[in-house]
Image 1 (cartoon, rainbow, N blue to C red):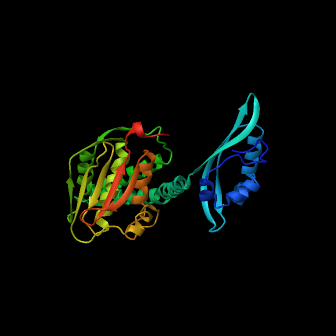
Image 2: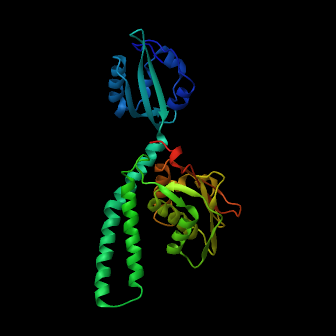
Image 3: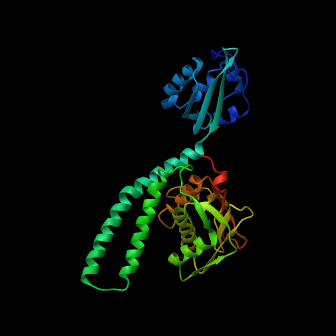
Length: 312
C-alpha cells in the first residue's frame, strides 16, 4: 500500500523480496523502485498503469519481473485499487500474484496447438488419402484397424485444439466413472506385454472425451517407458474427486518428475503426451503430481476434479 502520489510506502510483506528479488529497504527509500524490476519490454505499459492508478482508476494487468541476482524471469498478475476515505483518495493498494506456472502452461499449450493444427493435421490427411488408395487396390483385415487409429488421432487433435479455446468455466462436464473410463481406454489401447488392474471406482465430473486422452496417454507412458511386462493400476484416492494411475515399472527419478510435463522432454516418444495430460487436468481446475508407486514404478495422482471446487 502506497501514498496516493507514490511518495511513501505504507505497507508490504516479505513476499515482495521473494518475488521481485529486490531489497525492501530500497522500496522504502524509493516507493517506485519495484518498477526497476519490471522486464524492459513491459516497463512502459506498467508505468502507464501506475499513473492510471494514481489518477484513481483501478488497474489489472500481467507483466514480467526480472530478479536481478539470477536474471530469472517471473510472470506476475497485479491488481491495483484506489483507497478512498470520505471521498478523498488516501492510498493506493496493490495485490500481486506469481502466475509463472500458469503462463508456462499457456505457452506450452500454444506450442502443442501450433504443432497439431499444422504439422500433425497435414500428416493425418496425407495418411488418410493414401489409405483410401490402398483400400481401392486391395482387401486386408488390417485396413479397418488403421482407419480406426487415424480416426482416433484426428479426434485427439480436435480435442486439443478445442482445449486451447476452453476455460474451466465452459467445459462440458458430466459424471464419469473412472473404472469404466479406464477399461474403455485400455480396450482400445491394449498391449500384449501389459495389463490393467482397476481397483474400485469413483466418479469425477469432467469432459469424458478429454479425459479419454488423459488415460490413454498415462497408459502409453507406462508401456513405452518400461521394458518387459508391466501392470498398470487405476483406482480412487481418498477424496471423491481424485484418482491415481500407477505402474510397477522402473519409475521416474525425483529430478525428472516436473520435467516430464514439459513439451519435448520425453526420451521415448513425441514429448507431447504428458504435457497434454497436465493441460487437460489444469484446465479442469485439477492438479496432477508424480510420485513413486509401492512397486517402485511411476504413480500419477489427479485431484480436485469436481466442478464445485473449480474456479474460472
